[in-house]
Length: 230
Image 1 (cartoon, rainbow, N blue to C red):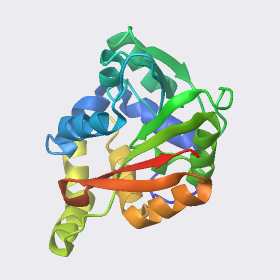
Image 2 (cartoon, helix red, strand yellow):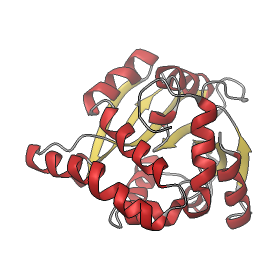
Image 3 (cartoon, one colour):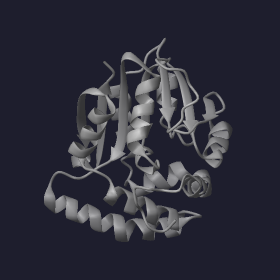
């Protein structure tokens, strides 16, 4: 997969993530200039995990997003579509509950989870509006969805610099640090093609989520969207 678009082949996406699974966390830290941990901490604060909560973490990869939720005492289901990601997660974080799941056809009953969350994975689904609707189905009434995703910097000069970084510096870094640098070219392009904050909020509302809001991180490089099931 060399060019990003919003109608992706699921097998190609899964194979791409299989190829970067072993160094996924390390490369992400490098590509985000070390902001990954701060963004994860901010997202965890918004999710507010606690004992007794049932949380579904979609596109969990090797479990870096699931780990702080688990440590807070919540029961976390870490799911991913990539077997490679799941294998790395089971090896590095054997205490987490990993399982394979397609965000467009979740193997869970309706109204089960207090929170459904997805970090940097919604834009890689074939049909993200359907993924939003499927998340709504498995969430309890009054429960929430929290989407952490790369977005559009709000300050125009910084947005230009960031776009140049994505398309030039990011692939160069990936070639030196990743076994599959083409995957990071795709990821950069997928970020550029993704809707802005208002666009994603509108998609969540159309899928049935209520009281949708978002919080910008690092000037809008990442946005954390939240919605409530009525």
